[in-house]
Image 1 (cartoon, rainbow, N blue to C red):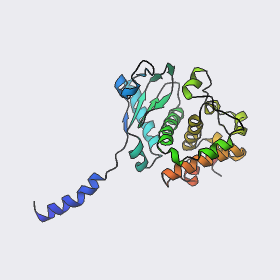
Image 2: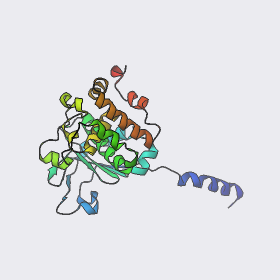
Image 3: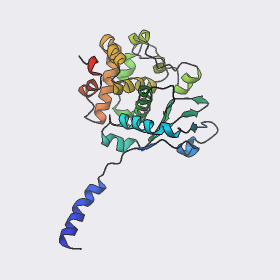
Image 4: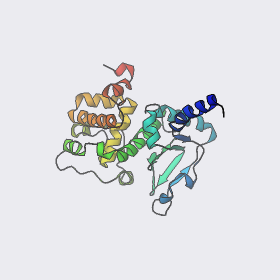
Length: 248
């Protein structure tokens, strides 16, 4: 090897080793092997229905758009794969999405709008980050915002089974610091509700932030959490995700 070639090899190697891997988007698989082995039992019993061929390009594009909201450094350390399927079921309930330690599962169904599919992704991915960086979350401050004596209902699965999983924005729960009924299920679902809508630049969320102090307080805690994960995530960053007509 001549001196020039050796120099190029030595210089290029660190860059190759330092390449940041990005999540793999998979839209054409739905067999049992897409789920972690520990899930494949009679109790969890996960199952999925594959997307039809014509629906796959749009599904991929929607996930790519959702992923664009996150720095590559964040994605590379927390998300390996995103599966998009036509239907998803586990623990006896049908759901729009779920997540494992480093995988997000999203349902793309004809009855879902593009915004709803993207919202599912952001909510599920926020669960992964919530678990991975739980020490960065101000749990005491969050619980102090909730009404005195309040207790979450149990879990997202239980909420679905009890038909208490609506994610339609409900103004009558804003006073207590919640966005919708599903947010009452667990602290994780409550957190998800804020994270997903912040990344969507949702008009109704920002309206609630501007008019309900407890909603603003929780939104501030979510933004602070994300900022600790990566400095890109500032209040200005989330403001910029709002529709132009909704920006002050």
